[in-house]
Image (cartoon, rainbow, N blue to C red; front, side, top):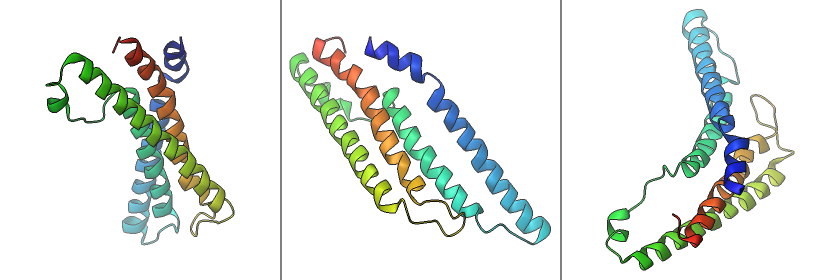
Length: 157
């Protein structure tokens, strides 16, 4: 049930956001290049915007990697274990990933709180916008990992 809800609510939403962020990053860099080499001028914030977009893309992409089980793993050792040990190692791995994701949420929220009043030099937006995707990514990872852990504990994965 939880897995079906996750699929229905987020199918394509995060991926769509990544596409829009990629397009914005391309437009930002293209505009900066055209202004600099075509007109001999530049905007003071294009590099800062590119940095923010890239950070958002990186953390949201990491969450999608968890959703699709796309992160690399060293399976050649685990696959040599007996079935019961292999299952236990996989459950432990998922629990460690959940712990790491919880650390991302906690640490990200701390950084957002600490930087909420600090403004970026170029765009003059709160620096906390740079740290927000850390918590968001961690929360998404938890949402994606919980159904997987339940399946593992039931012996279906």
